[in-house]
Image 1 (cartoon, rainbow, N blue to C red):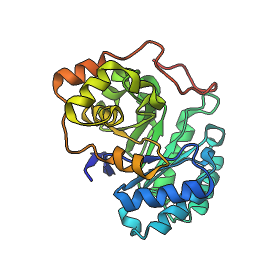
Image 2 (cartoon, rainbow, N blue to C red):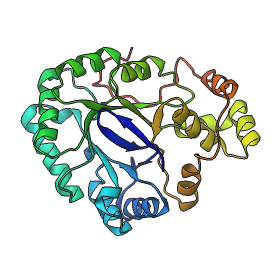
Image 3 (cartoon, one colour):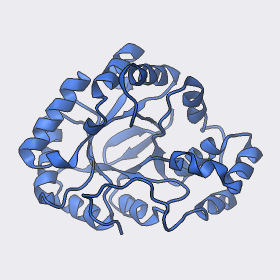
Image 4 (cartoon, rainbow, N blue to C red):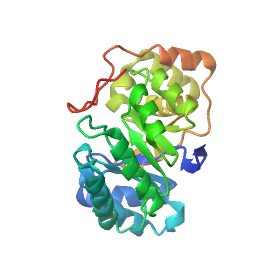
Length: 272
């Protein structure tokens, strides 16, 4: 496993996303992923699978220090007291004393960002989270969040794949020393049918999925693809043994579409 460092955090370069994984399937998938070499597991309170994620972590037999656990607080719980209550609830369900990364899942314009960020920083200060950050924050809100933070923000987790140009947000994160985690890095399979992806994959003896993940990694992101089958878990992890050329990276960037976004939330501010 390779690692990315950002504002004091050391984060595995690829991880497992667990959105829509439930019950025994979720627990088994997390356990298999960790046994296969994954080090980063991403969940959220709204996924309703934190208990199963915790079961999978314990079932893997790995030491706690060898697993990087991220969870996220839903925007309905961003008032300071509710944020702390939500963080405690996530820890109880995961059966952990702290998470490696605690994120605000989406910004909530109805709650002052200064209050939310202050409460988030407190979660690090009291030891509930080793690192903190945000998710789905556009440039302006990211800049504002950093201004309000008394603790370094390590990550902005965003939708990012070849169909969606996230250059502005990625550059803003770099300016603030933050890492970028990429969810839906394969656009839920939509990029697999692109001729460019198939040709590049064939040239490297890889799959379009692996090319998509490698593209995100070389562009500076940490992809967290979801997979529930052992063969796909293994395939997604086999992305450290090839490098895309500058021409290949440019060709993939050229696949971006104005309507490329696939994940939205009605309560979120408009993206830049």
